[in-house]
Image 1: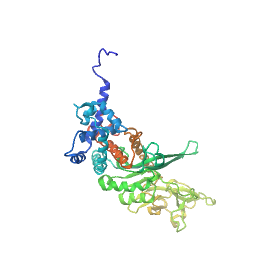
Image 2: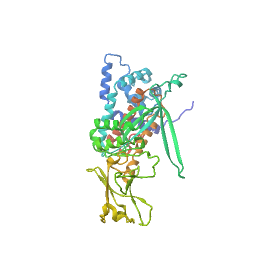
Image 3: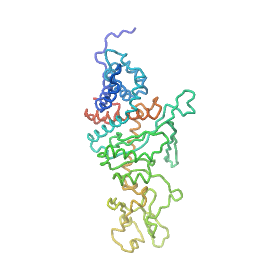
Image 4: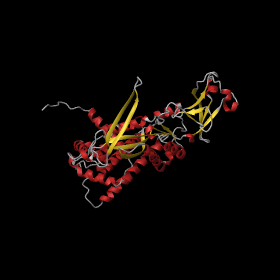
Length: 452
């Protein structure tokens, strides 16, 4: 045996361990779980109470905070770590014997399935508190989905080990773009499991609404139900929302129209290319008459003009955008020749021959094509700047995997996955609220930074 002659008076390892447990304290103090605890305790009233519900619940939250992939992993840590047992509320005099067996966790999860409404109420309460604590919370929202693998397998592949998951199915996502040399690339991802649909505040990178579906469910139909969920549960938050950004998976006429018409939110959604044979040919804004104003599928409004009266070749030049007129629901554009001094031999013929220094003004109504024309046009710098906020959802998804234990897990079944995702998002919000209460706003997005 190696004898240590003089133990250290002060161990940094102990400090790190204590600081790590402080993260759990942030969550336990911020989580509004009293209604859930009373409901579970009332159900147990008159029965054995060898393992207190509050302590077991706190240990489940600890498993999420510290990224344990299973109840077995959590129980091993509880048996080893006496300080963690004490923080969760287990009897310190029982030592490792206070740690519940696996069946206790299974029974509690079964009870939690029946109280999903209380878990959603906790999520909503935390969102409302963040709305009060954070200035501008909810002004910019982003939406995206995240594929989650099931630990189970399809029925035909599960006969050997019994790991069958009849709720999950196959999902596919395609990614494509252009390399630096201009050649296209495409990547296809397939997984068996589920899909988490998230709306997050893109400034603070915190979730405000979520839904879990099977992996095969399309992204596009999930947007409006999630926004409606926000309207019902957080009307004050949605009232101040100005932008909602998302990739081209959410491109749809109904989404653009409802966001603006019903909620006054400017959609910042990328658009899919659907003009197959005429991708390079613009369409007339006024097809019922002969005119020189055209538009592209991305919403660029062009003027067809000639820079030389003797030349037959037409030029398509983007008109100058002058803003959105909300009262008319039109996009206002100005003659590019007048605005930029571009030569145009037909300028005097515009507007029936009536010529002004300001040039011709064209108003394009949104109803020309609600999928293409939105209150914030895609060709503007503001749209490009707001669209970049969408990447906040991807960072939230990354923390969901890395910090909250979804890179490796043993979850099968839609009910278990929905509950586990709900708990993970609860922890994310509760830790943010806890950090705000402790004046740690600089670590608001961190799930691993020890509490001060």
